[in-house]
Length: 421
Image (tube, rainbow, N blue to C red; front, side, top):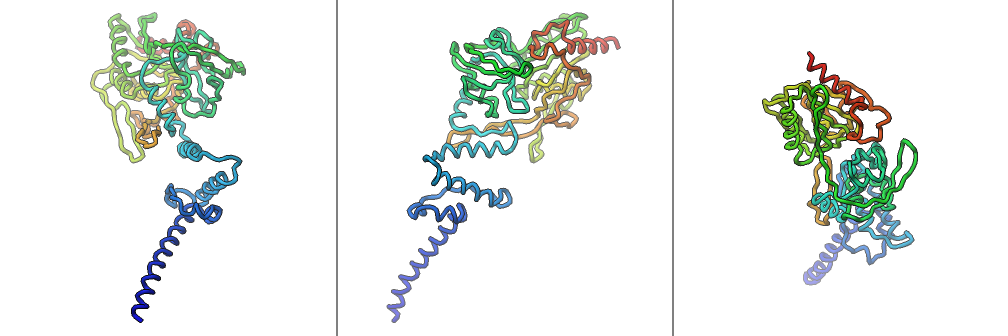
């Protein structure tokens, strides 16, 4: 009898364990993909290894998870051709970052990440424009550089780039990815299609890429011994160049200074902090703050600019330009003249630690002015608000004659008034 019981237990117990295992397995799989999806699969696929993505119950509605699995199941079994789910899923990952409604947070596929990293270094070979994304996520020309293919072809400021080599780029939200398509090898052709809002027309240009040698800063002495420094972008050497230009102007006996940041899209956070350090008195220049309220601060020393100052800005003055303008304004070290700035006050970081070769550019923190105001979405409001004369709306700043530049003339008048005080 006992022998029979032992034999029975040796058979029943393993059978029960196997049954419990499979019930647990099936239950977990059904929980992941829903009962309808599970029973629609052939029996031989019930035992395939499953991969899962986990969300806390309070993060994502269960019905949305079920909807995702339902879409996958329909495409897998009823779509008119076989689906490359790896390719489709890479777009789903992009959708996760796109759902934040933050144009500066983007997932790069392995191919895009490779192109991005290759474009970070080396000579700048392209057509000679600076660009930014407008409020409708259209790549917009902010400036056209002198002696460039774009300038020679007739591309203008405010043109919207809608196609590159006949590829529609209006659905791409990352300016860097479109710029990589425009850049290339020297002496190669690129076809650019633009939309010109002022004329409501599309125009197509075939350009020859070439090495673009850009001078990011220039200076001169204007009438009444007013110095003028035009900074196009804050590159990695701009503080050193700024110091050289400022010292040269001071040696010529200038009594006041105008710094022109119009159409300047920004650049190095640390370089602009050094320039601000040269201008404002000892104190806080700018700080960043993340979601956990961790702050990183930049301070200036005792040295400061001792002559009257005006800073020119417009709607294309962004990021680092806004840091400098806001700092000058907070310390009352100069008059800000022009129109409200772009309003980009976010800090980005790139995570390239992805096993598949992809990457994520994400917003990590926000910039704040010395007085604690957030720049992002707000911009810097000039002390003297004045629109540029309409005839120069599509003209690069450097091409506007000084005697016809109404914003510059106001800036000079403000500096002169301070000199006479």
